[in-house]
Amino acid sequence: MSQAHEHPPHLQHHFETPAQQFDAGKLGIWLFLATEILLFGGLFVAYSIYRANHPEIFIYAHQYLDKVLGGTNTVILLSSSLTMAWAVRAAQLGQRRLLVLLLSLTILGGFGFMGIKYVEYKAKWEHGLLPGSHFKPHEEEAAEAKAPPAPAPAPPVAGVELPGKNGPLLVEKSRIAPSAAGPGGTVHVQEPEAAAAERVHLGKRPSNVQVFFSIYFLMTGLHGIHVLVGIGLISWILIRSIRGEFGPEYFTPVDFVGLYWHLVDVIWIFLFPLLYLIGSR
Image 1 (cartoon, rainbow, N blue to C red):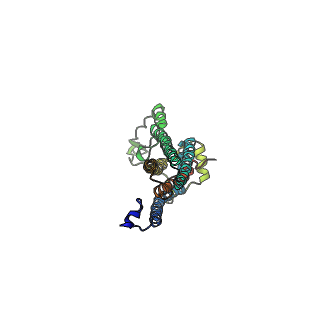
Image 2: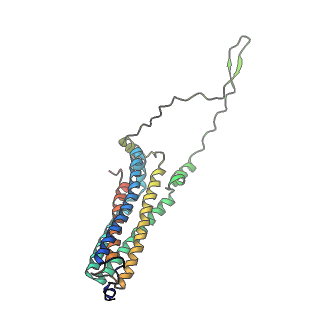
Image 3: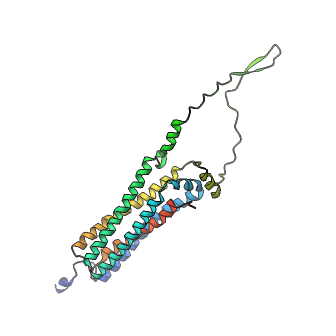
């Protein structure tokens, strides 16, 4: 009975000491973060393959992304990562008010990031820069509407006259069109990146640009979901911090949520240059 009274309230029954519980939790959060890295690693591999095979698409389409908004979001996430790391230290030192303030600032940074992302997504939606079959740039629709109608095709020739013994003979012409130039081969010749950049410089839109926006929305959307989850987790430990549940003896949730938030930050550090700055000179 005396041992039960000495048992810390935050120590689970299947652990013998708080240190053992902390080490087990630390191993668990690192394993979870490893799965997250594998998840985004697969997406980065897909990005690399498409980028290597179709550089002209990525060089052309990245111009539609707002570098200022992307850079602002980068600064916001880096700042929130700093306040989160500071919050962990405040929890270790038992600085309750500072912990609450830093967690609040981190949450504010998360909402700021998602607000800017909403502005970017809204602009893409309004301009028709959507993935897959929904890709239809509105400025191209306007150009098509202003373009003069195409001339009507010439009527088909029913036959040709050939000289005959008793006069010209009308010979019906085959309705099968003559064959075009022979195929250039089945091997796709990849366009050099310099030539692709030059074509983009001339304002020519390559085909299959929607591939870029499919990757853009997939990677940034999945990252945005992680940001929302992080906001929820930080809000949870903020409420517990207000109740005074964390201090030098117990700060495990703050430390683990901080690790998750740092991973979200690191992933964006890779996404920003790959999507926004690619092809910039």
